Length: 94
Image (cartoon, rainbow, N blue to C red; front, side):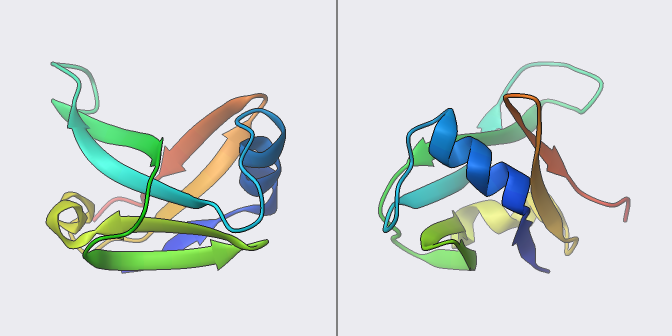
């Protein structure tokens, strides 16, 4: 299980979201109601790590998921990318 953040996603976090060198981005599981992706999906927040489950550092920005949230990946890798100004999450099927 790995976390990968593309260079275009990092650029989006910097330009559109205002993240800078040394910032920490938490990826967390949130309830979003019933959708084609199920009742849960991922959210983003500026945070400080507590109990890191997986982590990636790209261009001096730390991206991580806490141990309590990695269940959502079900052993799969997570790629964070950017389409236009939108951050997108991709997980290959199990």
